Length: 295
Ligand code: G1P
Image 1 (spheres, rainbow, N blue to C red):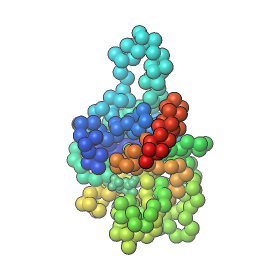
Image 2 (image 1 turned 90 degrees about the vertical axis):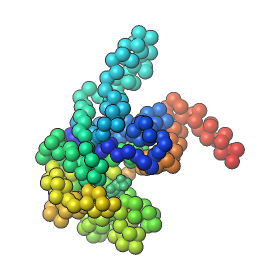
Image 3 (image 1 turned 45 degrees about the vertical axis):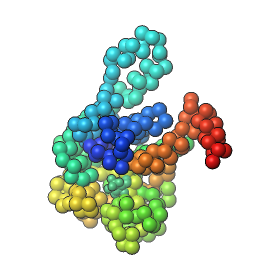
Image 4 (image 1 turned 135 degrees about the horizontal axis):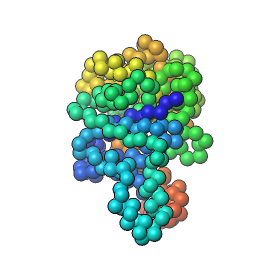
């Protein structure tokens, strides 16, 4: 069973400035929760019990968010604010642990994942990039759970992908497949993977979307991986080496994804999730109509 997930949160989030100057970009709110809480909840829903944050000294607000706030809980209890108290106490279930390691230097995503090696050991593990928010509303099981199932059946590393417009392929890791593209919720073996290709060289329009299931064998490969695109140690390059040795597969996502590493992505996620919020949704939908009518 895959029980460990690595969340690289050390990056400064320059694309989200000035919002991310004094708070981590992962702590920016979508509707009523910081974006990192959605990502951790997604992992927990898929059965993850150990969340490993690869972090930086300037980002302690993330650890604080998942820690118990004793004084605040006491105060809410004294005031009889039981519903709020319950919500705070259940940000993560009791049987889920959050562990932090530091990434001492910003050497790339591959390097960030390598920093989790002493905790993950040789076990297979998930990677969730916190910029990617996935709405799994209406799905019986989420994509991460689907990827875990595919990993356990095939033994192959699973890389979540989705179609992107051809002209945007240069922003992503892009995969190559032999036969037909897998249907949503299905996975198919990869024949190659390249990080941020030139548009004219992209092997397909299937882009890597921030979720991975990897065997512990990725660590020695990462340790040997030289800087690639953007002069950074790329996870994509290490996975391509792993694929050549023992195969890897692309899992086509079912959910809806929002790029919360960009300001417009945050706004879109706020619109999409705000409309569906159990308490705020109705009022928010009225606001949307009101503002749409004014345009
Ligand atoms: C990272 C990965 C890339 C992936 C993207 C979106 O890039 O390196 O392969 O397609 O996330 O999940 P970044 O957006 O951090 O530059």
